[in-house]
Length: 297
Image 1 (cartoon, rainbow, N blue to C red):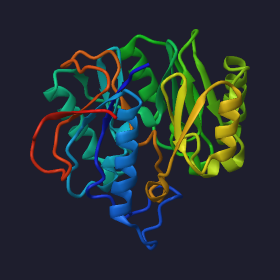
Image 2 (cartoon, rainbow, N blue to C red):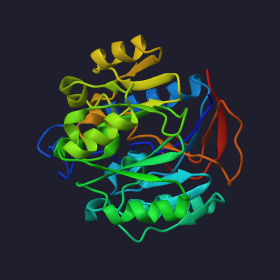
Image 3 (cartoon, one colour):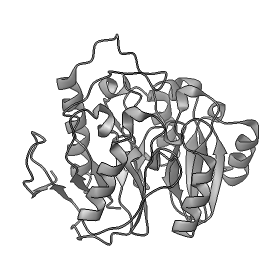
Image 4 (cartoon, helix red, strand yellow):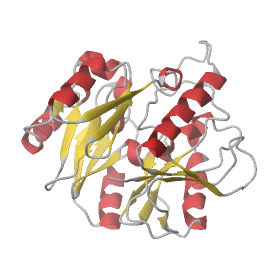
């Protein structure tokens, strides 16, 4: 199924601060390699028939590449992000302004939330992470905005600081779809909730989780995931999914993977895009406002 995504080229990618356990400002980062890996991911989405919009990267915001954190978009409504750490605070308004400029129904957040990092649509419900970044009060705010049941899940391991590092929505059939997840990232009560909701879930191992294998993007059949997650890829294939590995090792140095780089745009109220075309708001240099479309291979 064709999906629409929003991405941000990592023009200014760096690890200048540490706000999660993966980040080490003293370790070398290859910005050119990060751009190359991101470009491969972008082109992969086009080849799979998806539509990709691009937002301009902003100087001084090295984590803006992680577009999933910028907002949550459900039924054409945009719930803006409000970041916990001041280093990322300006990303929320930048993403909200992009959606407003492109004709979406935008809503600024009153409570700390980090977009699809912690708010994942699964079937007709929203799975919502808390405990490390997003405030519990944001779950209620999202439920009021989207009018969908929100199910709170408590994260307890700082390595899996966002829900999308510990859980992947694989499909949207039924009330709550189906998922893959790493039980050790969740509190005992949240593990029980997940077992009740998803008796047929794909369970990831500690090794899968440690390479951010669950920071993946599924269109219901094809699952784009870090190439290092080889065991998880085999498990997904055994369940009838098509794993699509991609190398995101440089972006992993900031705690990100394919999903972190990918904000899904659902129920579009802004300008429609035909499936299979990658729509760019900016040139590849990240400068200017040259709008163009590029056919996926």
